[in-house]
Length: 289
Image 1 (cartoon, rainbow, N blue to C red):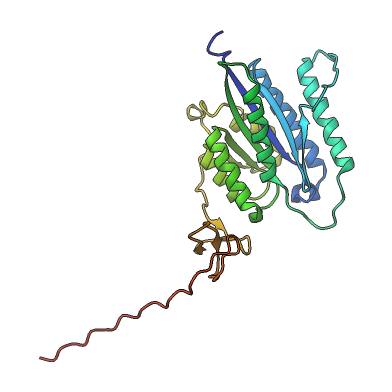
Image 2 (image 1 turned 90 degrees about the horizontal axis):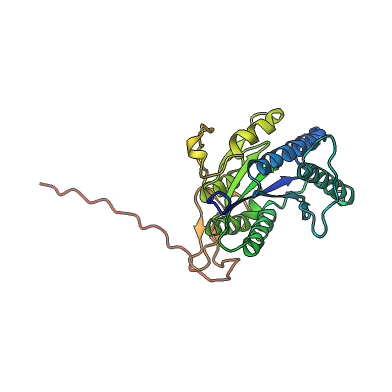
């Protein structure tokens, strides 16, 4: 067994399918465009090496579901139009499972945030399962790619931080492709895990940007000309209003963050004394000569 065959590259793609996204509300066909780009990008990853593996998750406002691979027995696909059978299997499985999710998802009247933190945690569990079942002596290089057009959701701040540091501990790289607005929390996750963050300038070039920025392995990205990294916004979200703040109060017991002083920590219920007023320095009187 050569050195090249001793390593497996596992790519887990998380696609945000929440209909509350602005790009989907404006044009529902954007979801189809993103799906076609994901299928082509996933097949390009599988084409690089025979040992490569792929998984695709759909993140919604109420749950996270597997699009590929299917739990249980896979589909029986025959070769059509000269296409590689594995590529046909990936395409048909993803599109069939996404159609089931769209038809069975409960309708919402008000916009809801996507459960991206839970999707990342689910991807980490899948990576851990593959790592346990791999053959002895085989190295698993795993990474997660998140594609979302949702807005920033500071209410999932603690869940985000838990998944980011878990991924860092497991050696999993997190990449993020923001389809709409800039996402500071996910940008922090990319910086913590050593991944690549990209805010897509135009949706029509999604596949080109995916192949350029995210197809290469993290070990070889230093040799490529990639978009320059932007400054990471490391502001934390307060536990009371779930908003990003610059200056706040931190509980010395559980490290919860609050934008205003509270005598009782709402997380661990520790009681604190009111802060004493700052002492005013008295000016020294000048001595008369």
